[in-house]
Length: 405
Image (cartoon, rainbow, N blue to C red):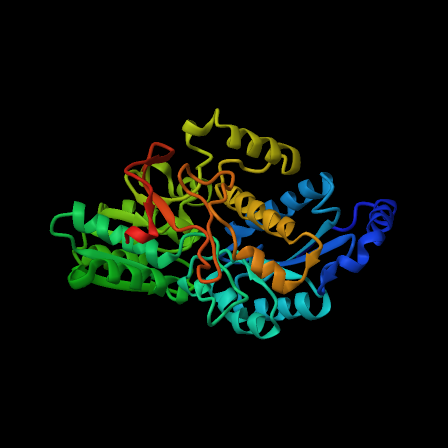
């Protein structure tokens, strides 16, 4: 699947070109940037077991349409090319080579999934092409010394899991923890964070089971966890499998204290298919405003987001927080590109990405801002715990920053 946003009209492009010629000598470009265009590449699972994340790519595409309708970025229109990798790392490699070597994009933006991004990690850094604001929280995306061309976006999985571990220790007497883990680097990152957070009490984990992307269900794994005697459940799974796990636990009468990784916190993608009644009391960590939370119905940022959705994605499910993720990440990418001015080189793009200071990004929770530096490639480093109640999330406690972990 290919979605492209091409130049609005030849006449408009020519006009922009003529207006830019006078200052041409002062401009610097790499592949993917010209006087009239910025070309951005992206991969996303529009098909397969990870297809619930396909709305992220659609949301990003809509965002760039909005930007182009407003005149683009510093007079340049954005050409966004997004390809379906089906959450298959081998397919991601093939498509990213196409984007870099044939389409000659300036950068990749918000490519989705830990395993797919891992498959292209070294390639992107060897080619010195920015791999910006990846849609995965693996801690490996924040290593500028080893991988100076790759930067994360969301809170890293390890920190998130440490926060859950400390909540368990403080609030669950006689905890016996069962873990369901997606069997790849994404799952392992969360699991190691849990163990780190538990410290010398890691033996509280009494059962650890995994699943593969190709598994039809996780029913047998949930039965094993219940039979282990676990009274705490750490659910490290993608939305499709998270929903199955929630539903199966209810079906067999297992009622542990349930912690769910943020990547499956979408009410529309996880809790609606699982059955709202089955998800009551589940705990997660949030960093974005949830569209199902009525607290935000009169919020100025939320009103603007809903107006954007209504205009550019009519008929889309506005209860799906993945659209908010797409909107917030795209906003940061837009600001990063604007900071580049007329120096649209890959090196300058990374320099600007690594120089944000307490930037307020629409739809992040109050108190959460974006900061980066040449030694800090983790843009968002805070979450707030929330408990599922009724048909939405109810936040509790304070915003917890990574430093406090």
